[in-house]
Length: 342
View 1 (cartoon, rainbow, N blue to C red):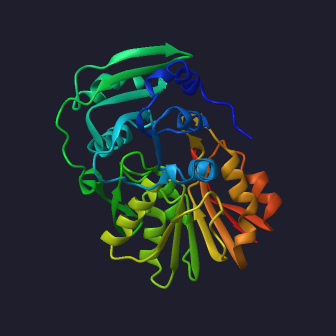
View 2: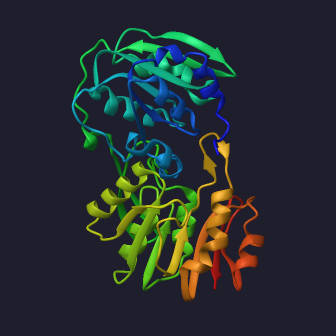
View 3: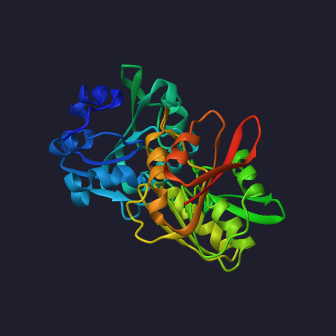
């Protein structure tokens, strides 16, 4: 069953003439079924997503036309790009730098998004690639900008887009590598600092859920050399960041995509997470509630779950319902660290 299309897609529906007969590449903040409509209008359609949840939801309908990864390469083969504005401006810059080398000269550059989500910065985003774009449409608090690729494009160099910083969690030093838009890309957040300051020593198998740049799993791997570390996230950019963070610290771990527990078949002694509760510009609890409720099924006997969460989030009742015992092992005005045992 199709989901209702977003306000951005409703605006794009009014401008479908722009896509007719095009070899179209779509990327960015994809959130609905609208690309399926475009597949019927275009000469060819490629949907590139860094969101594994979206990829899973669209793969059956789009087949080989949808790709999930942190990078897309190859020779110029598209004559139109539609970028749906991601939340982070740096991620939009990253996607444009990656996608423009895949476009033929004179290709259409189309940027669409919610006005409160940064779309009105389209002029600056497109400045390296051509003349000032025109505003094609504005509706439902969304805007569509249209430019043309008229300037030479440099080859995309993935390594140039990693931020690198040093952090210290307790007595553990770590070098962090992160791509744009990834959680902990700019520094170790206060919640993860609290979690790492309070989590006990570990052995056996660990799952770092929603790994971001890989800080939590990497710190715990460094502290507990016998620990077998698995890291999962829905973001391809996060997964590649975690792989780089492990590598630069000479650590080992398995890093792979999973939509909550979709790709997890084994059990762990420990699950640790600073679970996300924002998706795009909307507060989002459902995935985290599912993660907490189903966690006991992925823990071995005497296994435990350690999470840090904003103090205002009501996770204690969920944990009390699904675990034998839960205690708060760290807290301040902003955060709480919960340790739950099966």
